[in-house]
Amino acid sequence: MSTAENSPATNFIRQIVSKDLAENKLNKVITRFPPEPNGFLHIGHAKSICLNFGVAAENNGLCNLRFDDTNPEKESIEYVQAIEKDVHWLGFEWAELRHSSDYFEALYSFAVQLIEKGLAYVDSLSAEKIREYRGSLTQAGKESPDRSRSIAENLDLFSRMRAGEFADGQYLLRAKIDMASANINMRDPALYRIRRVHHQRTGDNWCIYPMYDYTHCISDAIEGITHSLCTLEFEDHRPLYDWVLDNIDIASHPQQIEFARLELEYTIVSKRKLNQLVVDGHVSGWDDPRMPTLAGLRRAGFTPASIRDFCERIGVTKKDSSIEMAVLESCIREDLNITAARAMAVLDPIKVVIENYPDDQTEQLEASNHPQNEAMGKRKIPFTKEVYIDRDDFAEVPPPKYKRLIAGGEVRLRGAYVIKCQQIIKDAEGKVVELRCTYDENTLGKKPEGRKVKGVIHWVSAPYAVDAEVRLYDRLFNVPNPGSEENYCDALNPDSLHVIKQAKVEPSLADAEPGGRFQFERVGYFCLDTEDSLDGKLVFNRTVTLRDTWV
Image 1 (cartoon, rainbow, N blue to C red):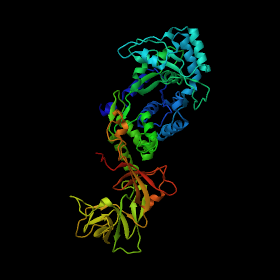
Image 2 (image 1 turned 90 degrees about the vertical axis):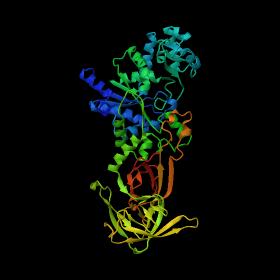
Image 3 (image 1 turned 180 degrees about the vertical axis):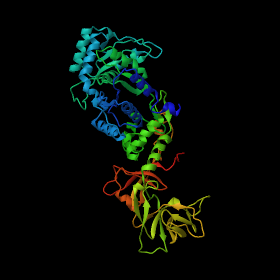
Image 4 (image 1 turned 135 degrees about the vertical axis):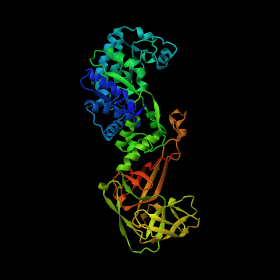
């Protein structure tokens, strides 16, 4: 699909909405984002959030946040609060906060209506028998013996179901539609089941709970939703959505429109599988920076703007497709390149002693916080006789075209002087532990006379350096489509996290705020961890490398 066809102004959903408004089919666009509070929101939900809130905002309409809380076994207040936080973080405000449980009484009344019209019945078949009777894609289903119950008997049984007279699973309320329908969703689908589970909002007031397909359409209608936007897996459920609304006494009939869900390479967006990763300890929690959850992305250092940009770039289509991880990473690189302050950090330090530099001297060098944005100000960086450089920036036996420090070679310390390596100090195992160098005092902000120094490396002052833990996060899986694996955990990337305990960072970072984002010059983009940076301890999470280096 071309960029023009896929732009926010012209995707097919926005065309439908514009047409409806032009033809005066509605006065105001009203949408909703209806998550189930059974887990944290992930990057796939971000697409739906941006679409629902975006379509409403573009048309001076409204968008509700509605929790589909009809499955209390798996739902919790923790997930409710996390979802509200994520929607706010992305930059959206809902018109009204609703819950499907707000409508439990109305949903029950509408179910009674269907029974009174002879369109619903109480069934005593077991779950196994219901599956057997449903048939298959090539074979029609078989009617339940209870399908012929009288209206009076169904009303009595349904009332007693609500009163708690029956055991869990003993009865089920089903719609009476067509057991021979080509659409299996229309073969007498379940409307209510008995579940004695404490509900996070209604407590123990109910022991029967409505099914999603029945609840969702009625909730939309009660709220006056004009366009019910959902992902493609609900396309086959649309006839049931319409059937329910056509057969109850309700004025509103929202239009359901389906769009392709987001499939992102090298990750999974199944809540069940994400929960399993948490439960099995493959990640530290729902907000682990490797997780595709919004909480995880936020902790990793992703910005709301980068997520919104990503959702806009991938567009809205009618066909499922897989999006390369590089697209998401490109969005955050572009954002942080503009917004992140610069700093210097040495992840694997080697001490450099500048032998001809005065022992007791400290120079406060001035550095820009952002080379393209003077408004971000400047900072002081101390320069001393002893500094740290990164181990990767020295080679005793350099590879071809190596432009960093070598024995007998020169290199410029970023924003400071040119130094020359005179001596290499090793430990008993032969590991380089210290370099003895000299500096050219005439090279601060100047090129050395009579010679050309090509390499520039970063550094931090040894006596002023601040200790930090640095967590180098990478893609959680090592195959593009781990969800297709029979055991997706076998596809976990064993190198998705590398923890560096003894990194050295410049002293300005000691005052960084949790959540603060920085470009560690020549290293990557990092975020000060919001959970573990406590009591003066600095923990930085890598958001993304400076360029795409995934192999």
